[in-house]
Length: 504
Image (cartoon, rainbow, N blue to C red; front, side, top):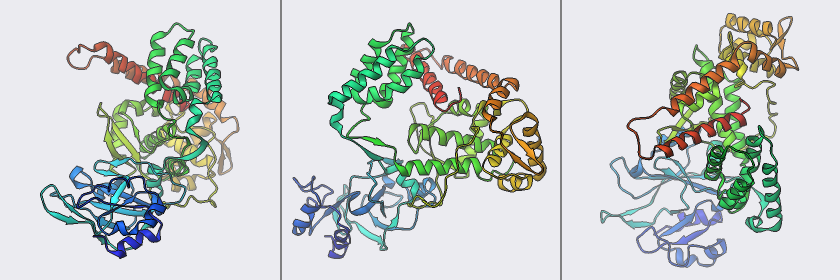
């Protein structure tokens, strides 16, 4: 049975503890919906097995289960700054050892999301207290044991970014059925109905998320009936993608993206843009990491499924180059693969090392670059990864060749050559030994993307990748028409992603 010392640790933190049932992991009937007051009123029922409702009392518990392929080492690969913290050994036997509960503290504003963090690692809704005894499937009775009796450490920012649902926007769930919501949907559908040729895709992208979130399949039908164009096949592919992505996303409340997610992805982007990238492959790896982080930011998640071809489309790099770069990023710990989709495409999670739960209020954020690192101009003749890297360093205020070489991890002569080229084509201006970004650089880049062939090169790459996707794979299938629609849906998703990222 849980000792009073163990139980008091949780009671002092005002955690919700519920009584267990016998020597099992089950909760006693009728106690599953307990609140803090119920725990405090019924302490006599907590003398035997008991469970903590995860997320209460400011505690966050991560369950690592070797039986399902989990390990603390795998958790640390995803969160390199994971601190030493309070741990409880669980009871399910496995040749690789028993499982572990890692206990962290978390800020009061975190709204916990029950989800997997990787194979055999998850955030459970409730966990057994140390001292609880369970009769396992092999007939043996085992006890949950406290194996690291220290104070819980703060959860690192990267972990909070994954588990936080986001900030409650204050819009209650019943807004879905309110007259105002109906009126808002009607206005959005009307905008789509009135869209002209050439702008329907953009308008659809703007209105579909809200319409589908609020009305689900009914919203999809409203958009379908409002369509006045002639590309019915495009519409069905777009609707299918929107329903898959947005249906049901408004429950229980509409939420703003978590501030921890925003900060973590900001740090990933800053490291990609302004970190030191040594060696001949450094600039390429930087570009691929920036693309992974940018897709995560676009999807408002700390992970993203991204095939080699998708990353090639976003970065403008050849697929074989992306494949090698992705592996280097994994080997170096910049990203972690936490799963794969049905097609075998990796699910990447960019790592956020060396951070705490406290989002710095003193640190002034770096402003947006005047020219995107993924802009098509960087695919132009005579330009490459070092050119966009040097541009970014000048943009952030590192103005001399010597400083740029040190900050970017390149030789001094390389920095000088790159700076000279950027000045020649007008993307930078020189003032003695210092360099600056011209105010009209966006217009200059758009012009150069045509003159230097960057846009044409991106278009040829996209056409080739789409052609490769459309080729038959293996034996013909009885559902070939469905396979074709899936390919077109994937193509639409990729093109939409590139539009949202400002690449096309």
